[in-house]
Length: 153
Image (cartoon, rainbow, N blue to C red; front, side, top):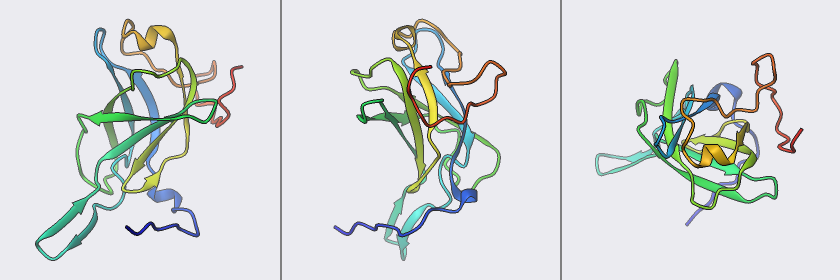
């Protein structure tokens, strides 16, 4: 197996952009990421007509304050187009042992990672009691606080 370690960063225009993260309908066990270019800017690789290794689906990870990374299961992608402009969405479910608190959520599309997006999970969010509610760490004016620090304020 070969692992590519890049010596630079992806151009900003190629990064997935997270606009919001919303709790699913009451009784459901999923959340929805709303953003742009969530599938990435490339379908991956191909070789002739016999090998297609598409990577045009978003991966969602959440990092806790202590550095533990949790990977979510994604489903119900709004589309599988790569390099698509405009809004996209993807649902994700959490692992059973997710801790409540502030976490950094990252979407990776075809190997290019978004900037961290702060989400706040409370016990009520984990119990699927409340629905259609944003869980982003937004300030009182409703704009993203752009913080990558997940310490509680």
